[in-house]
Length: 338
Image (cartoon, rainbow, N blue to C red):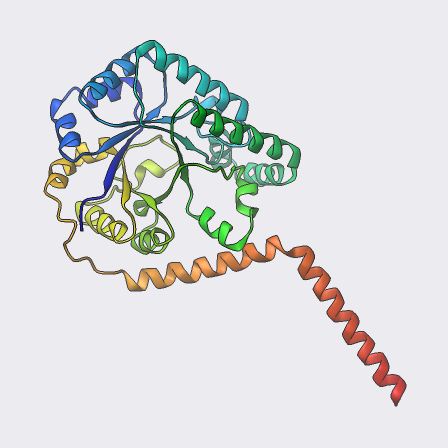
């Protein structure tokens, strides 16, 4: 089994990003792995552009992972479609000014960070947000149309598109439902490469089962986390993947996918994983986590069942009413025949 197409996510501010690549060994290891870097564009600064030009010159394939300021929601969602379009326009100008080259543009559609932080501070806020997202149909339709237009504009500009998705989206599609996406304010977009984020460090003890179960339904996956990323709630207190856990997840994912992303590059550097990946044996045996997979599959089946019901409430109600009418009619006929 050959090594997959490998990409490292990096989600650092400009100062930390420059510090990461100040060590020439980092670029050397990334090049030695024939890997790309997906850069979370938390800013469009001259300092970041200088580092990116070095990566361009070194021949490292780069993906522009578009992000917004935290006070605009950070990740893209139905609340900030205009800001997302404006961010892409600013990104295009910045790219032209600094003569940067990109392999693709990534769209990360997740829950609005402003709402997430408010919900973590006061759980009552979460219910208000979920109801708002579910009931504001016009806003959702406008946002989805705007994101479709944005994705098409990106492709017209010559960039393939990537989408970073929460794994339950795959279950929604299987069930023909959109309940969770509507509640969370997400938009399901047609992209050239879709990458479910299967971060087993956040899903212990069933993380390996999630990687195996959802990886089977994907063409590309992201595994992690090895540490880093934006701080939300207590997420930064969760222990990053050990080398053994990362090696397990990579081998499990490789059984299904030719393209694997690792979150994050800075975590791999800090933990010393880049050097070990240079000699990584992708053909080494890996134990299928049968117990964990069984639990995950059961939960997924339950979730798909609930989602299917949510998408077919009118039909179920009509069928139930029809059945009740038939039974009532049969009962009346029996009573008349007595």
